[in-house]
Image (cartoon, rainbow, N blue to C red; front, side, top):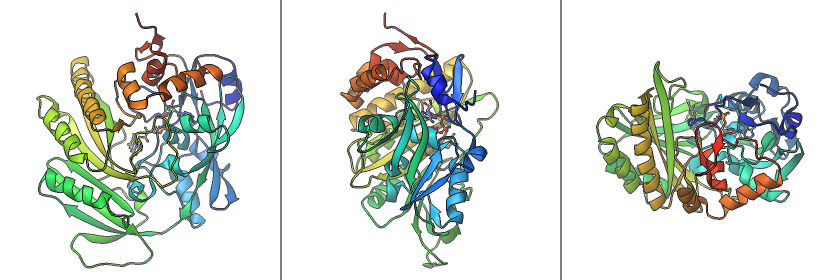
Length: 403
Ligand SMILES: Cc1cc2nc3c(=O)[nH]c(=O)nc-3n(C[C@H](O)[C@H](O)[C@H](O)COP(=O)(O)OP(=O)(O)OC[C@H]3O[C@@H](n4cnc5c(N)ncnc54)[C@H](O)[C@@H]3O)c2cc1C
């Protein structure tokens, strides 16, 4: 139900599931109850407000595509864009937001100045690093567990039309890992991503800049408006193929630990029949800004530089095949934790209390307290993260107490 009065709905105390564009991958926005949908990209465009000082205020239901087009016309840009631009701003800020520009600018949540958040009493308040800072820290990357983000004030950067891009092929996974770790230690790179798909390994490194500055190297190009280009290496089909489910997840490990994380993914993936379902492994670098906030549930912990490994599968919609894939994901999640990393919560992650405690420590109990204090017991109550915080088992829709 798209709602013009989200405060009234949240304040009604009725069980609600919050939804942006619905692109998360583990039933986060699926319910047989009531959905509160914010996604309205075209209507939202009229509500963009320029606040000066490089800040822009937007409704949560706007898409990154509409926002970036608007900003570019005004000589500005979003610092970090994900590779799919038709998700909602609110839904992506509720998971974190990582993209090829993360090698320079960290996560999308690192560029949020403040958010307007509605709690379970229908109360709306502006939250920032200094005002209601705990709600701010839990809402961004928090899967809608501490309320509905209604509006956000975002920092912008100058718009450069061109990006100078190098695409490079790699002979072996270890060569790709070595190259990625080397780039992660450089602070002069604006964009980076790498992928392994159908036996082909390649990376893309880039620098933002005006004008056609060709360096003459092989596989070098100047690409106009890169975020809108459909890359063979970054574009992923939005709809899963018929009869298939899209089971995706990403693991972020501190820089220096990509090799063991990738080795775990490769080893597990050679277990038949899983090698048939893997469509791509995808690598991104995240360099957090020096003053970044320690958001409670984002995929990056305290490491200043992290490397993400995305594991994307397309699985037949039957219980045996999906269960087998989920078992692999669970093993990878445990390996990620051993390596000091974190999962990206938009994806498939079978979190239980023990693992969640290991990952999030005291923030898990703090989440339970915030939800109680702000009367959010009925909002997004089906999420495993909420179950872990309350120490209850969650089946896909609805919570049931641990026996
Ligand atoms: C094709 C594709 C490519 C992708 N590429 C990337 C990528 O490059 N980088 C990346 O970081 N991610 C990527 N993702 C993941 C994507 O960023 C997340 O799934 C994101 O949540 C999508 O936004 P959404 O509007 O669809 O959110 P939804 O799926 O609708 O919601 C996500 C979560 O946020 C909650 N929520 C939604 N709106 C609000 C709100 N206004 N206030 C509070 N809570 C809310 C929901 O309850 C849910 O728990 C990709 C996904 C797809 C399908």
